[in-house]
Amino acid sequence: MFRPSPTTPLSAIQTGISNFTFERKDNEQFNYTYQSASDQDADGPCPRLNICMVSDFFFPGVGGVESHIYSIAQCLIKKGHKVIVIANPTGTRNGVRYLTNGVKVYYIPVFTINTPSGRATLPFMFSLFPVLRNIFVRERIQIVHGHQCTSNMAMEALLHARTMGLKCCFTDHSLFGFGDTAGLHINKVCKYVLADVDHIICVSHTSRENLVMRAAVNPFFASVIPHAVDSGVFMPIPEQSMQLRRLREFLKNPANKKSDVELTIVTVTRLAYRKGADLLVAIIPRLCELFPKIKFVIGGDGPKKIDLEEMRERYRLEERVELLGSIPHSRVAEVIRRGQIFINTSLTEAFCIAILEASSCGLFVVSTRVGGVPEVLPDDMCLLSDPDPDSLVQKIIIAIEQRMGTWDPERSYQRIKSMYDWHHVATRTENVYRKVISNRHKTLFERFQILTTAGDFYGKFCCMMSTIDYFIYRFLEWSSPRDQIDDAIDLPGDAFHEEEELSTSKDKINKTQEVLDILDERKSSQEKE
Image (cartoon, rainbow, N blue to C red; front, top):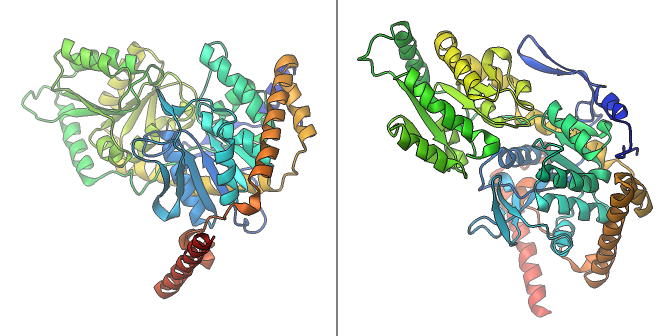
């Protein structure tokens, strides 16, 4: 497999990127003229796969990565695959937990630190290998799927999985630069870990181009599979239409000072610099001065929350700016439905699932034009502005005075429902898995040949690290043989394909009893030993 090295001409990489085009037709659907592995039709049903998703960012944390992993795991289980998740502990969540439909989660009890993106693990390198190997062997894992390049646990799991000969996928959810310190370090890690993964998934074409340039990977082994939204949860309610009609009447006669109609602008985001919290601090006082009937509802927590609290006190906006703090994912839709306009002020964004959820709830969207945001919604469903206060205020004024008069929440919901669906995302991801599982296993020497393309010195360093990892793996195989590791028992609900599911409750009870009998036999044999 050809992998471009840092010395590969930039034009060669850009040629690979330009082999696809992205266009939007009739403002209704997205057309991908580049046929990646996720778009190619596969012959016959996909065999049942044992998949492990790894990331530092998972429930009960709140964010786009967390909801993506959970939603796609649910859909893959419905397709008959076995899916487990490995994450770091959060609060009292340690050990093994089961979520809806039998999603098995391993919360590995390791030391974590608080970052602007959430709780993350420190780079443990080789010390997590014994635990991860034990899980991979117990669960009979075939594919390891890491999420987010800032997740140390995901990157280490991919490295160890390649050493064990497992198939590996990686999904990137963020954009990073080339000049800042954090970007330089992350790019180096990506060059090493992603050099020999089987396939890469990005959530937008902008994200794909960014990752290909940062990690110097072959663009033909990177697919674009966007996020989706749960249309059964994020949907408008009748009260929104009534409130919107009253708002339209008020906008026709804004001189009516006695009207109790309020225009509510909502945002749900992490209150950090990258998410544009400073822009919120700048635009809220100006909009409150322009529109006496405007109100802001802000959900989320972060290091910039104190700046918003100071702004609210300075301008005496306690009754017009509501700070909800951190909210659980189950309440996000409820908070979004409180408003008529949703604003996103991010300074960098690969996709932005928040504006997708807001549009599905029937809100009109105003967002900054950054990263992959222009790819998410058609032009008539959102207004895009430059990431500066003046442009944002101007676009919000246009949204209030021109767009609210004709906006239909129900039509917005139906369009999002037809464009973005988790089952479609799972099908395209399944196509990637189908291609990955058929790839030929690389020998250690072939991996070294690929790793040397990372740079004259850095490539040799990567080969040295992989050699150490391989010797640790051989030692673990000797000290803890596979045949001495018990296989995990699959739950009845995820042990069969959809078409093979048990049809009667009696059969399900019998199957459950069989599993309990196996566990009892195993327990008694262990007691005898």
